[in-house]
Amino acid sequence: MNHVALFEPLIPNNTGNISRSCAATNSPLHLIEPLGFSTDDKHLKRAGLDYWDNVDITYHKNLEDFLAVVGDQPLHLITKFAHKIYSEENFDDGQDHYFLFGKETTGLPEEFMRENEEKCLRLPMNDTHVRSLNLANTVITVVYEALRQQDYPNLELTHHYDHDKLD
Image (cartoon, rainbow, N blue to C red; front, side, top):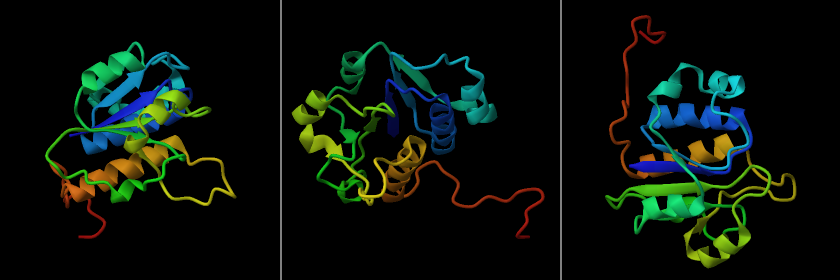
């Protein structure tokens, strides 16, 4: 199973979009407090649409509480400062994987990243044009790479709809 963890998220629309992606990929969502919004926020609900109730959400009071849940399971810190590319990592080892994404404005705490440098992964990008990628886009990119390596467990590779546009 692939777990998505957001460290102190600030933007409700990002978290709402990420919750929809978690529902689509059967990925539990971990929200590490403090949050920069209320989970009753209308923007959060709108971005997650009617999928919000289908997401397995766990709230953690702080980073230490989250890390206690992770234990010895694989933890990946997603950051633009990493030296290793996310697609070079093996996610198909039969273990649960936890992907930790930082706050939209400041990312993950620097000291924590330095202490866990070997767990840091990055998405390639043109750093001269942008400071960072959108959080929701980054989450789905990493989760789908893990799922691709795992042969998309428990996901429908094809589906027939009542009014299928390709039938």
